[in-house]
Image (tube, rainbow, N blue to C red; front, side, top):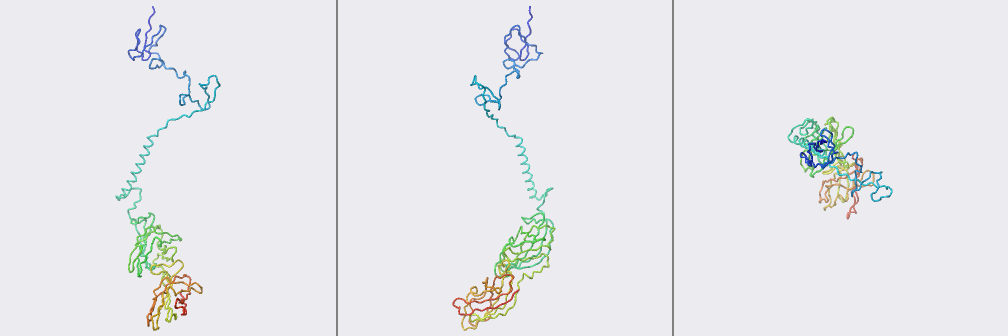
Length: 413
């Protein structure tokens, strides 16, 4: 009598009784078998099984199919390969154009983005910390403390020139690595000029140091101001102070620096900061004259001529100077003499040329009373600086054209 072979569950290996159709251990449905079918003992190697108890086939024994499929379930051949069309049975193989394989979008790495955001936050916190420390007056290692004034060296100058009618005195020059009360200060060297201004004229004088003030450094280079603390104008009879800052290396000697006043279109004045500069060439120069003229029945005398680079409120143009003539008039007539505006009949001839200059300003009266003597006034002209020979001319005018012209020559260096 044949002995029954023990049976075991093909999934979990639990022993099975004769005729058992469901494994009591894992619930697998056991198919019926013939006597020739054996289930190997649990100690043997079992192939993997599916959910339904069927053995999982070996991947090597499966037919190979393309891994990419076009829309509609059709396989997409690799580029350059050929597959027979399922709709062209009996026909020769034909080239199937490759279909585009749409790759799913790749998600950006949140980890990388997080690192970038973290670095930005750290940087912003560091910058904020530096600003807070500066506001609190805390000096951080490795940073420049711009709130502490570095040592200042002061050099006395005390030089005075006149610009546009106002006297400007350079009191002193100060040098330091920086000036904390200058919002535009550098940190590699600054030079500050302390100035005093005085207006002795009867006219308000205005100017801008940002435009007219420059420093001439050793070697000839020029620098403009980076900061100006000034009112910009000065009223008659007023004295006031200003400061002008320049970027200048602290290694540059103050005594070798020149302050230049005047814009590029004006007659400029150079002030060496030596404290012993000779500035006499910029002061007015006058000559006494006794030029006699008879004009419109009046006795005219040219008493003085003055050369200068300014008048009240105005600096001379570049390459020119003001010539101011002073006239004295006597009226010996038995009636009042009305000569009219000096701008219409007084001219200045330069050298022997034909060009006649008209007045820029005048204080001469337009009429002279009967018996009036010694009535004076001035007439101002703008002439070339390199001219020394002049002729003052009184021309006929209007209804007085019957009077002869008058003139007198003079020299002015």
